[in-house]
Image (cartoon, rainbow, N blue to C red):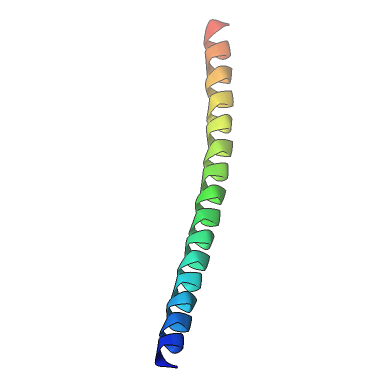
Length: 55
């Protein structure tokens, strides 16, 4: 039974690690989405500045 207990414990730790990695990936994806929005806003501001300089 010790062997089975070790396997179950190992599987449990792998599942926990997978869950942590999944959470980290989700957080990183959310951060990237926020950065994309900020980049879009900055590009709009740059375009507006360039247009105002032309006039």
